[in-house]
Length: 324
Image (tube, rainbow, N blue to C red):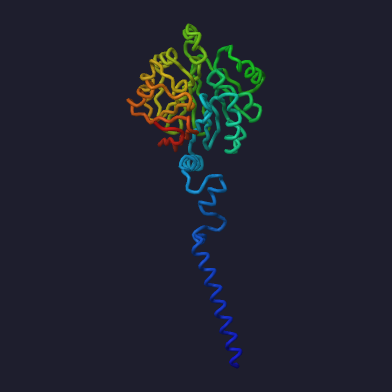
């Protein structure tokens, strides 16, 4: 082999080594060598999901881990001074109350974002506009299986349109008299109507609120109490009924207003967590907050965003919204 040939071979080898070294440098410093094929790093995932890299995603991550592992997630939506809770578990999807008409787009956006196209059950606690305002719209857009409503006639403006939407529809249950037990694949509901509606009529102003259906949801060993807008007289009834309303978590009645019997209600539940569905313009009553604080209950409000509650059937975790 002549000198020119040897020199050419050496040059080719050196160029090959240079290229290989450059590729190694790029791969090493990109961090991609640590990821399985077909995945992206966490900054790319956050950007793809519309979340800035490094942002606090604990609530969404906790909810995703809960439902992915067969857990329960309750979303108390930020819909102003109104109520709407979406419940997702491995075996069912449900909704309790439908907020105001103005919250329709907010609810719809949430459901689309969560890829929810149907509900196994809907509970409408009572007929105030801040609880049924978007109900007709939801019934028109989404497939809803069982619907549970209270047994009374209301003069409120959204009552008649709702009754028209429910007329002739299968799966509608008017709950009255004895508690109604509903068994779903991985959770149960005990729906409690007013036991003495006639006694509540004396307070005409608060009659709608006091006729609220109360719902005790049980998932494994975890219990969650949804209270609608019950006020003094109805709280007294439920306490006198001897019903077991012990729970890990309570949705505080009537958007955080103070009721004389609230201390006894909190004691009866023994709840560790409380959620208040309200707005920044309607902060919870200071007397209520004091009563909650004295019980050592962790309280969350939807005033600053959705409150997310997850459970694996044993442990309850609450995050998001505003904490106090």
